[in-house]
Figure 1 (tube, rainbow, N blue to C red):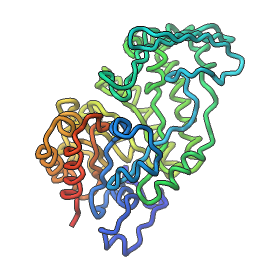
Figure 2: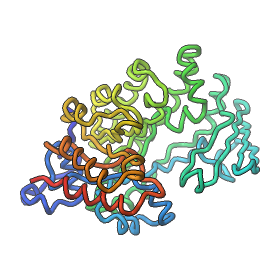
Figure 3: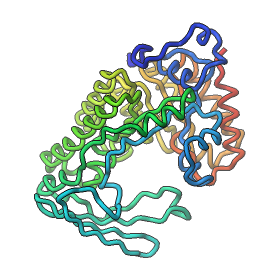
Figure 4: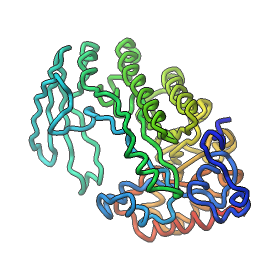
Length: 398
């Protein structure tokens, strides 16, 4: 069973807190839930970044906490290691590497073309970056038209683009201090594929590589898997209490088969989890796609939280089946559909969806209500009010 022990989380419920559940803080509520005990009410922890950005722009954490008074924070911070696969700065901290980079407009897009001249040879990529807003949304994804890794010949050069792993987590501890008893703070460490191998090489090519060029497939994933473990260790050495593992590039929704998932990805997940637990921290596993075919094997790795538990039609998550089969192994988080329920639904549909989810998953703890991903721009205010109201009304433990 992958429940989170009180000792591992350095969390000790006072006797009066256990008895007077109504007095629990967000932090107590979340950690109690992860221990598969019943808190005062179900923690409410939806994803909200896109909505917040659209409504208020970039705001400091203190202001965010004022705007979201009922949120039980599962705050996610980056590990601050420079990332040149997904970012396109004007200046690069890559000593000894010469970089040719040009930007130009192509319709509504900004195109960035780069060539890195490394001691192991040249590698290049091309990216189309859509503008934020309008039909592109608040945080649109860039479009790769040329990837850095075209063949195994590019792997040695790729290594020169990976800066040393950061080991200064002052930003994390400032967030912990700010969040305080409102919740927990985690560091995001992505899988070998997530924004890593899947950013350096086209995912479709990687899927073909598994069959036609297994050596390239294995070597590229191994580079980033070993690096992810190094980043986890650096965070944990700095006193981080939880790791947010992002694995949505690995999802069956991305096109991978259950067999590849079991053979390739499950051992990697297990290494993440075992390293995290060895430091007394917890592991929150994120996949906002289909989970029906993988949730049992993921739970078997020992993760502590599974999100986002996306229901049909976007996902395939059956909350009742999951509660019955893995509900005592992991805390389930998320579920409420951000698009068809929260954004385009009615307050009545939202209340009904939340009430049904609470009836299924609330008993016995191990349930954090959230959303299938971030609330989106344009979500009606009355729908968000209905969500918070229903979560508080139907989430109370007696």
